[in-house]
Image (cartoon, rainbow, N blue to C red; front, side, top):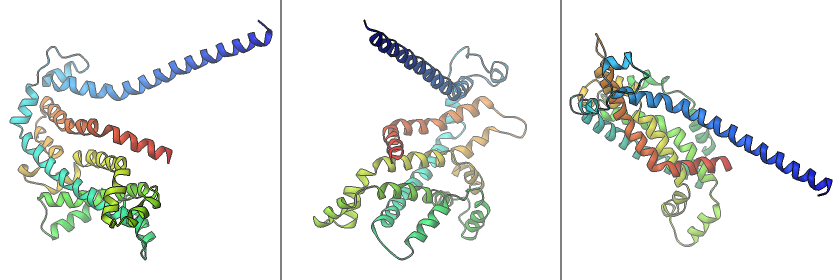
Length: 289
């Protein structure tokens, strides 16, 4: 073997070892990050099947026996079946309105030219830059004027108003990337604007629609501030506000509270599992764009 051949072979060996070391370091880093995120979740579910005393005395120990009686008690005696139905109704109606309005608005901002179009886009951009907490008092006053306090409609209106700016902006960014020639070809075939939206824009923007759905679902499902302040009747409360029933003036039933939190987390996990492929596709498309 010549000197140059031995040198190339040595360089290949060094490069292979370098790639192997980088791969090990990368996997160790990813494992560490995953452990940091998963450890609190594992600790939470471990404590949710313990007694209240065991939570404080043996917080980091495995439970001696796994029982889901706390979950059953929270569901039956804690009224969580009613809180769950309230959350499903409020979040479901809000998401339907958010997706419908944001899709139509984003399509109109892309397909149609009208006076003040870019001013509308600027207002939409400004809309999701304002924190919802800043608008809490004005919204409460407005709902009091129209008599909607302690109704699900007040939550639905606030949720839709809070979510529309970001949803419209995200969908508009995806619609802008769709070639105009596709819409023109459909127009020549006799398609109306709604048919172009339904047959061309929506199928191509399905990852973006799924991303909006998951993102808004997680936010609305876990929203507490408005759900607690706008709803005073226990029968109308949603899950986040209903969890306060386990916090009393003289003590808190931590085991049942954790079981209730576990129940409220399950729908979020189910939604992410069902739509994870579309959500990841939207992230990849946004990164490529």
